[in-house]
Image (cartoon, rainbow, N blue to C red):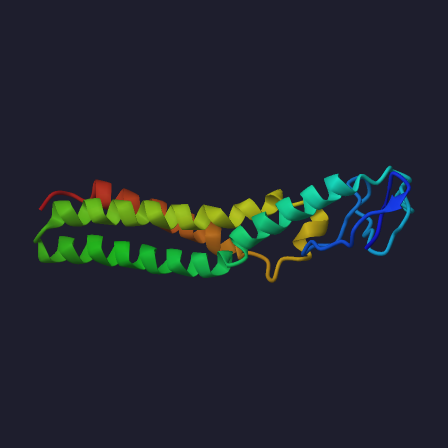
Length: 157
């Protein structure tokens, strides 16, 4: 990918994502013009590189978000088992409640990571390896809140 800069061709595009026009989201791969052929906006290659790097690094941070949601499922299940099991056996109930609360909070923390993906520009979401499972994330947050309520409001034994 070459671009004009001060009469000289700019170096080859080496970013992981293609150069995208910030005005119209047109893919500028192969364009040697100083203007977007779609909307006519001036092409500032340094801005496009910064945008591509920023989006790429943000995508790397959340590319495994569905795996993180699975961790949230395990944390939530373990929190529920700890709170209920120790309540049933009547031993270490207070400690189990505290541990369950922290695990439920960790479940919420892993779940909300899925919602970070919505901040990407529309063109960038097509580069994600898979879309986050938002339904699972919402279910995990609701489940974790239920576990917190259970841990807090179970009657004393």
